[in-house]
Length: 110
Length: 444
Image (tube, rainbow over all chains, first blue to last red; front, side):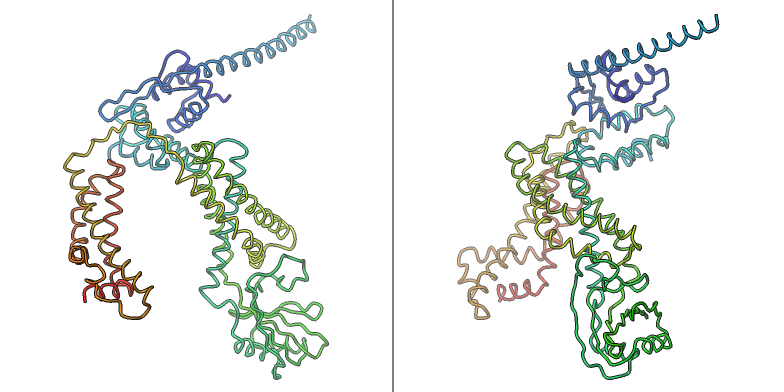
């Protein structure tokens, strides 16, 4: 799963959001590291909707503007959970390796 | 220009299907993300929208089978358009020299009286057979396919020096064969028994052909990819029956298209890594393309037509936010459409009757129109005459309606457009030979 996809799903895990809401949330969740542009966002929304990970929750049409709110489907929640589990497992493996390397260095020094 | 207008312009990079489904939504997001005093799009946003829009235009459904089909269609499209460019180059100027011209060219190389002049009108040479292929002319001496062979007494060495003295660009002499070129002509001079020359006179490949073929190939590839994407999206929207029908035409078409595509790819690679690509290689590619293009092209077109015509259209997902046209607009639009189409129908019916009668009696007397159409003759005449006079004048109403109603009403607007087009086309057709004959018969 690519980083923009991961953060879009994460943003929508909390509550349904519209386009700009997702961009804003992703920027906050990533600590400012990831700024989604509208073209990238809608390409991802198209793909994720087609894959059944997102659905439109509701629409607001006011003064010629249209805000469409998206929410995660059960499949979307499962996909995000699977990605979280995978990342956690990967992080655990890396952390264990680092701990072992750190212990070996300490033993060498003492 | 307002920021919204800028973004609307940028969103034109997306295909219409996307703009219908998401255009207003994406515009809202872009405006929401803009700063309070922002007047123009930030360049990063502009590039992102343009890039993603183009990617969306060229998108094909995900999956290896879809991508493979699109690649084959794209390469086949490139090959077909490249072939079309070569074909067009032959229409613009003679492909083979005239026998008299060839004899005059040969006389420069050998002044004796020719013993024979034979025209070899071959459009496509066979598959590439190696360096000894007669078409395998050296660089700079590339000929069109087809030639005039002049057999004349003489020697190769004499011919070579005479041509050089006449200002011809003369190639190297190898195994008693050499090539020479001057302006539009290329000749290959060879000998059988050292005393009789065979002078093959060709028309030279136009210097722009290579570039034109490359442009044709690129445009054809892009067009093939776009059409394949559209057809494949239609395939996905189909139910089982529609998909089966598309596969019936599409699979044989794709297999037929793969043969020349693979052949062309192999030829391009072999020629490029061999002794270099040259314009005459294009003729080999076309020779291989045409026999397969004849069945494969129509089969693929049928599959594409099934995708476009029969595919169930998904309803526009986006609510219409533009102001709904007034009842008066609709009323006027339908009135103008009906009037345009009635005038057009008058013309079409008169011409159809004329054609039917003409097919029956040949060049003979067709009879009095009043006897042929006893019922409704006067009404039809009124429509026919008024259509010619008033239909173009009606454009003064329908064109403003088209402009003001642009993108507001789907079917009504499209029908009005088609109807208004008849007001331009039919008066022009009236002055065609068929239109004039039918008009004279009907009005007399």
